[in-house]
Image (tube, rainbow, N blue to C red; front, side, top):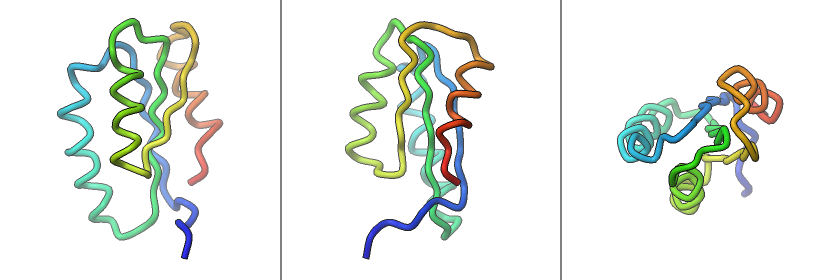
Length: 90
C-alpha cells in the first residue's frame, strides 16, 4: 500500500538554520508521528547561505514526510511561507 495523502501540512520557512535543524527535526517529528494521521512538513529554504539546504536534503532521506522547497534567493519570511503554502497538500 502506498503512502496516503497528508491530512496535515506544516510549513516551516527557513533562512540560515543549519544550527537549529538538529534540534527542530527530532522534536517536530516526535509530535507529528504521535498524531496517527498522515502529514507532511514543507521546509522552505529561503535562499540560505549556510548549510541549511544540504541538511534538509540529508534529512529528507531519513524522514519521508519532509518535503524541501528551495528559493534561489532570499525573498523574505512571508514569501517563503506563501511558497510553502502553495505547495502544501494537506
